[in-house]
Image (cartoon, rainbow, N blue to C red; front, side, top):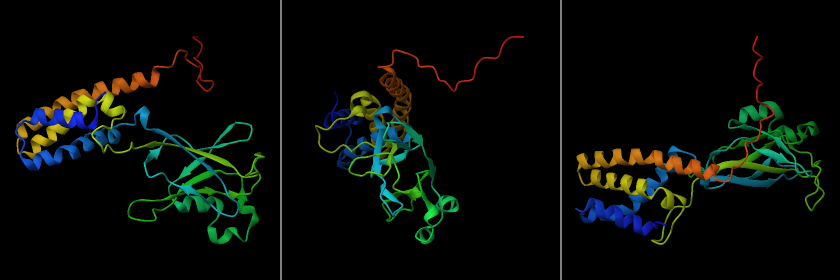
Length: 243
């Protein structure tokens, strides 16, 4: 199990010629290497799920998680009987309001309330891209749940997340354990470039690119490690008879 601090040491050992300016950048170069993996590919460890409950007389469902990367399939309503009902996604308010009316009209028209059909990722509220999820149409408080929030709908939003950034030397995560060689080589390559050594930087970039395929293989193993039975898809097309 490689830690954040151990990976930094390995990067420094590769670069060897370490002026203070490059030494100071090594922690950041390691973090950037970890981030680059998450930008390039959605790994199993990045799977996440947000849970929300609707509220009467409002479209706001809740805040988008700060670690949000992108949606992971469709959101869905979880019924009181444990069933899933898929919902659509809209990233443009005009689409949502074109179907279910604007906020200014909803108070005047009771027909604009109903069971959830669509999730809108609203406009960012600041320059850090903080945003909220909105539900369309607004809740009619008529779900089949009978608990303390009786009548309100349970919404699940699967998404891909960015992992918490490494900080302390003892920190570790799935990437430092399973992609440590890629991280070291990628960070070392950037260190060489920052040290005006383009030849070695190019060499270690190529090595990191090759190692990336090994990281993908390990992720595939992680995904399939518990799968023992192939489940038939009832929606799969049947083979055509030979005539």
